[in-house]
Image (cartoon, rainbow, N blue to C red; front, side, top):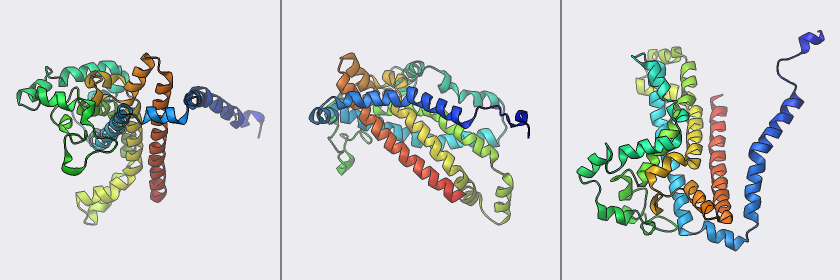
Length: 312
C-alpha cells in the first residue's frame, strides 16, 4: 500500500488527542479548578456557614427541584412532539419543526420577557387566572417570603403551604412564583429532548411494529414493550441535557421569577453575591451546585449506559 493511500483526512491519534486535551483543559478543567481553588481559600466553618444558610438552601432546593420537574415534563412532551413530527404529515410541518429550535436561537432574556408578559398578573394568561380568584395579594405576600420555606427539610404532614413544591405558589400563580421558574426551564429545555428523540424515532423500523401487531399485541403493548425500550436511552439522554440546561439557566428565569426570596435560583444568587463583591460566597455556592450537578448527571449517564447494554 502506497503512502498516498495511507493518508487520512483527519490527523492521527496523537495530534487529535493532544488538541482534545488542550481544548478541554483550557475551556473546562482550568476554570473549574480555579473555582475550587478559590473555595479552598476559606476555612471549612466559613464554607459550611455560607452553603448552609437559609437563603442558599432555598436556592438549591428551587434550582434542583424546578430543573428536575421541568426536565421530567419535557420527556413526555418531547416524546409526543417528536413522535408527531416523525410519524405524521400535516400542513406547515417544516414550520413547526423549525419552531422547536427557537429556544436555541432566541436570547434567553427575550424569552424571559415574553413569558413574563404572558403570565404576569396583567398578562394575557395571568390576568385570566387573577380574574378567577386564583391569586390574592395577601396569600402571595405570605407565600413569597423566605419564611414560607421549612428548613432544612419540607413539611410532609398535611402538605402545607410551607413546602414549595405543593404550596400555593405552585398552582395559584405563575409569574413571581416557582411555577414560573418551571415553565421557563421547560421552554429552554424542550428542544434538547425533541432533537435527541427524533433521530432514534426515524431509525425505528416499522416492520417490528407490524410484526408485533400481527402477533396480536395491542397498540399499548406494542408501544410499551417494543418501541419504548428502544427509546429509553434517548429519553434518558434528553432528560439529562434538559436537566443540565435548567441548572445553569439564568436569563429566562430572572424576569419571570422577580428575584424574590422564594423564587431565587442558585445562578441568581451567585450573580447577587458577585455584585456585592462576595467572591468567596459566590464560589462556594457555585462549587456545591457544580458537585451536585456532576453527581446527578453521572448517575443518569450510568443508568443510560446500563440500559444501552441491556438493549444490546
